[in-house]
Image 1 (cartoon, rainbow, N blue to C red):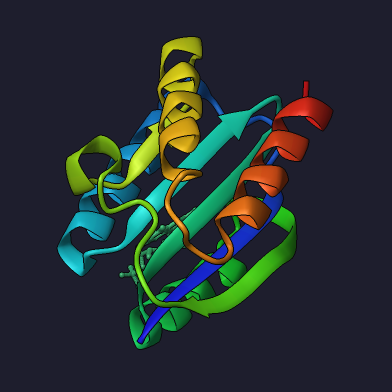
Image 2 (tube, rainbow, N blue to C red):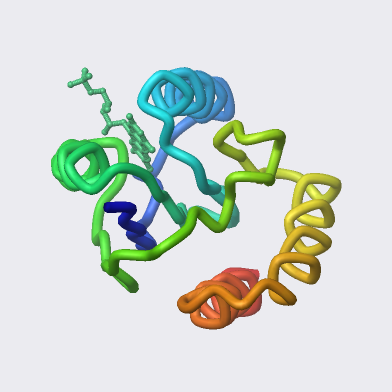
Length: 137
Ligand SMILES: Cc1cc2nc3c(=O)[nH]c(=O)nc-3n(C[C@H](O)[C@H](O)[C@H](O)COP(=O)(O)O)c2cc1C
């Protein structure tokens, strides 16, 4: 069973760009190992993450994320099972990190493409992402 979770949180104050880069790198590596696909957007003091993968993997990883002291005020926006991965073709199947304009453009192009696929939850995820991008700027 494939599961997806989406949440927002606040980056702990005084986190340096170097620390964020290190965190991004370890998340990408770990998620490739666990075959977790999705995207983490880092913008204006906030994290926005969509993660999808094997149900138990997602649940275990999310438990760790909730306890992680590098962010706070986590709010879960979506937690549901899905039939197919939505981010399988994003970044060639690697977990995506968005923290600059060019990566964001790529994500938006991907959304325009994937929206045509008839996958339940994609509309909701696109809406959640767009709201995040709108209100965190
Ligand atoms: C905003 C944020 C997002 C994270 N996302 C992931 C993730 O997608 N996958 C992951 O394995 N760890 C993620 N982590 C790191 C986990 O909280 C945890 O440190 C990591 O899974 C290592 O756990 P372990 O040492 O028990 O293996 C994230 C941490 C933060 C602060």
